[in-house]
Length: 80
Length: 373
Image (cartoon, rainbow over all chains, first blue to last red; front, top):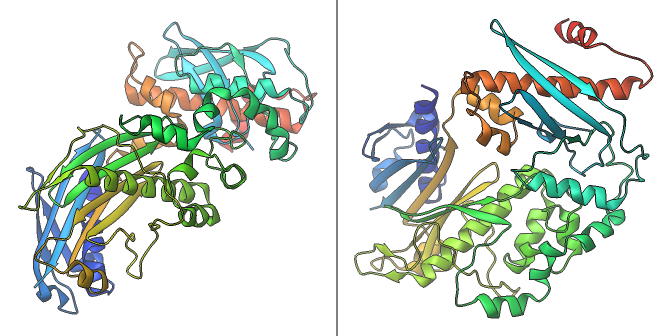
């Protein structure tokens, strides 16, 4: 359970890092929903209050386990 | 003061616990202490036997070779010493940096490679070499780009050693290993950070980014925006010697690392590990325009996924102890964490006992009663 929470937070952190330079606004943890899949991909649903996510052409996030006890997550965001 | 991190023990399966402690500045051996443990029902009990002092020097008068030898033992994970370097006395206040000059002269093995950085660069330029001060955790091609993680090899070394990441050592030593790799502005920024964890995180993040950039530089960029690298996973790429003429990797106005034009990057830290993600801006985008108005963003993060019990173990045990967990027959990994925690409590007890009054005998039971109140 702890591990899944950590993974979700980590995925959101990566996504936030990727999108913040593009939209330059605060994004709360409740404004994004990420569901990690076992193949290392993740499904992303954004509910930004500002509606800025409509500018996004593509959002992707990936994860993998490193050294057994670490999660590495990465994300990318592309504007229209 | 002695922190829990300074307490270092090795439990041997013969049920004799040969132990030693160390402080951040290193201490000379004071006592010979042997710890024993046994299992009684579901409870662990620990006891100690102490012999006469082998050295009774006053704080500030310890011979420097004792400090150095202590560090050597600390670095050697397989070293089983029966001499407990009792870290009872905080020597940080009486041992200023300037008195540690003898240590640097004795640790020739760690200094000689930096005597002539230009020559070192010339001789190792063609062959990727492993840097002994840090290690590669991974070097991966993730869908977003090239991702490299580096970890500091010996984060708990004494601050007075010339290879430590203490600001005084970095700024006073022009041949410090970090100054051969990072930009002067990065060094200056990192040294201004007040907390040691933040400083280590910053330096390792920048090191990881420079390593990723170096690997990207040596890699072949293919037309379909994917990456191909000459170095395999875990391989080291020779980093360029950075001068003040090169660009520093500080933060831009968006909080992103300022990577060279044509690239986008992201950095994450966890304890002594720095992770960097670097990717090229696709040819379909104007990289100069993207530098001003970003159209693409990437992000990376690294998190620990251990359980609560493991979290406790990470806090109270040293890396060597963590690696040694699970080798005791009949004792589970979690049980051993608790067993070793008892040893930590014992060391705190010894420490308090010495601070209070060496002449006054405080029994173990008194201490237990005191801690349970």
